[in-house]
Length: 116
Length: 116
Image (cartoon, rainbow over all chains, first blue to last red; front, side, top):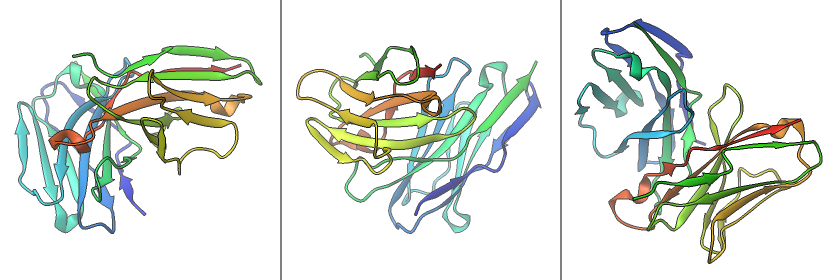
């Protein structure tokens, strides 16, 4: 069975600080995908990134960066120079990649509050 | 390019009534997924459909819940004889059937169901 753990329930940081959101996953599959989604106070879910299990390169997109380490089954998300607009709940998710179009298993989310 | 559409955005029902939630996938997407988010929890998979077919309903409660994705029109999640425990946000997601984006699910804004 697949499982995603986001141990940090809530994090608060002062604006402009860097913050890292942790994600640890469990799966028996050798091929899988990892995702991060953002849920702002308005409630919608916004796709941020997809990573497949064969690509361990770290990725940077503006102030966002992701660190994927298969050895520790982790896919952590760092926001650099945080801004108030980053305040949201962030979800890490996992899917198998057997035949494509597989269901997502979500973590319980981390509520990030950026203090102005 | 319109995103995933869900309606209604908010739905209030009394115990015992029926709730119908609608989802129109993104243009070009033929795969639809429904997830439920209980208050302060992560999203839980319910059902995965393609046009006229249910592919995976392993997360759907056996009673009172049903889903369809007809050849024409939106996908419908139907909850009969609602109870207070059905109060939640219901999210629909869609993905294409092939291509590099096949593994990525894009979410609608959700329907907030409140059962009185």
